[in-house]
Length: 171
Image (cartoon, rainbow, N blue to C red; front, side, top):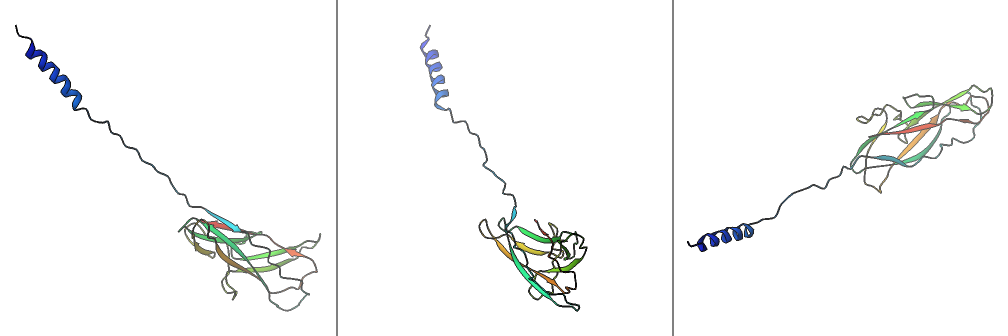
């Protein structure tokens, strides 16, 4: 009996299986999400209308400050300003510092130097409302917004009057 051909065939089959082995392949992804973000990078300083004397007729006292907002690149945002009394239409009231002084000096906030565009707090993440709109520039580039205030009458008890305004950025 001749066993050489069978042994030769078995050896050839074994070598052929080793010679045709290929690499195992798999894939994976690298990913991340860049979320929109906004911040007030320069808080506005106080709008100081100065020291005034009591007036019985309408007299305008104006002042301004600047706030800077930094939002993610190409992120649309809307800014609202809210006086401490919760008024959403850009009108607030400064309260006196003296005990027993219940007077409230009314003021209005504006977004332009001509004092014609009232700046209130009806902005949302999808619309400007009576706020101000902007678009994020880049990580290091803040957008500046001037804020103006006007008082038209100062017929009030002598005192130091003030109010706090909250800046809200919706994006």
